[in-house]
Length: 336
Ligand code: PLP
Ligand code: COI
Image (cartoon, rainbow, N blue to C red):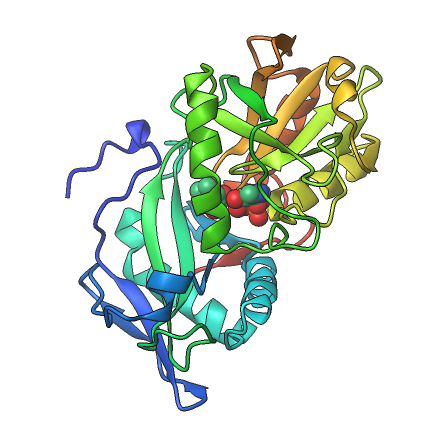
């Protein structure tokens, strides 16, 4: 296995194994590691036609002391259950979720990027309805899979700013829809708006609230955070955005370090007021936004990450890589 650890992007590559649990007759079976990344399904599986599919994303890091640790896995477990509950899928206990994450990371420990390379092992839990059926109803059978892949930065240039297109032509999520959970359909719905953003010369789509198109919601891959002139961290409050574990963690770190935080609706006119804008999430960590394009106007936030987002980025990645104290008990060690 030859991996160029320093130049990893965010792309699939085969690893040693994934772990799978099957649900049938009202209960989950035991987890089993598979050395094969293909899955046999009925052509009538519910997930293929009707999208009964939910997923999560979290990361394991090789820390400074050489140990491998996973960031905030219980929070992902909780969020997965809010997704499965909404889609009438069976719950996964935190015990089973953590067992799966531990087992698959341990089995693929050689794929966790070494300390100092800036990479991570991305962990992707996914649950899909597998019963063959043609009528629309919840599946009787499910597969819970946790796969892993070594990754570097989501956007090519690391923490160099990327441009965003503020979308008026499409909506991501309705107010009482599914924007607050992490389900496959939300991402299928973001493909066309992201294609449009790219056609406008931007890497990411930034969405408005579907009801009024007045307020900023989030990016297709991450939450939105703006920094005001007086150094306040402002992030949207809305029922239709995904509660980002990264964003919640940044809020905690900000408050702990004397940075004022506001979680409230953000009117799109406020884009002119921010001095820094960032996208935050597991895959993107904190990616600075250099420019937001909206109806012929460019809102510019600089060619480098700004000082407040940089301070938060350093605090967050310092915890990830075990360089700073894990004050909140966010890191879980994986036994080798
Ligand atoms: N918003 C969307 C739409 C996402 O896909 C993600 C990624 O998971 C996030 C926000 C960030 O969430 P988290 O920080 O939990 O990864
Ligand atoms: C994550 O950050 O974990 C996500 O699921 C975002 C996805 C677009 C890669």
